[in-house]
Image (spheres, protein in one colour):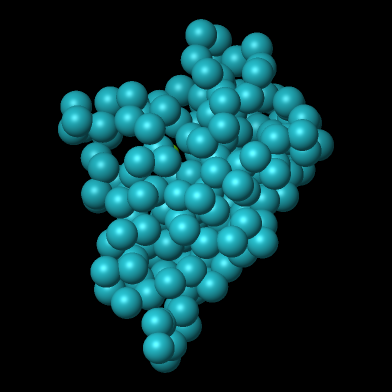
Amino acid sequence: MNIRIGNGYDIHRLVEGRPLILGGIEISHTVGLLGHSDADVLTHAIMDAMLGALSLGDIGHYFPPSDPQWKGANSITLLEQVNQLVRSQGWQIGNIDSVIIAERPKMKPHISDMREKLAQTLEIEPDKIGIKATTNEKLGPTGREEGISVYAVALLVKEA
Ligand code: MG
């Protein structure tokens, strides 16, 4: 098989006094995401999708929250490492698609910046990265603005 698909999911809690970082972009908001790293839930879901495509486990295996080395880690740096791992095994990204589930803030003004940042990090064209956003219609934890969650899929293609 010269193509592989993976999916990723992540959720982080929203709290006061933390920055909101999605896809490596800091977004102005009243609350931010809590986590051991910078809690960039979009980048985390994308990493899990890439690792999942090659059955390489999940980000918790490579960057365990119990390891002080990753405290406050910039998730974009972690994504660079996952990208190197994938490429070192002879695979490249066909495309990535994702959906951010958040009641607030509005994601639309930030999506092109996120795509640009992720594309730069992954060394691919921005048109290979889909980022969509939806509310959860005020239902459940994301609907109550207790957190933000993300689903992502990644298609990897074996280099010829
Ligand atoms: Mg996470």
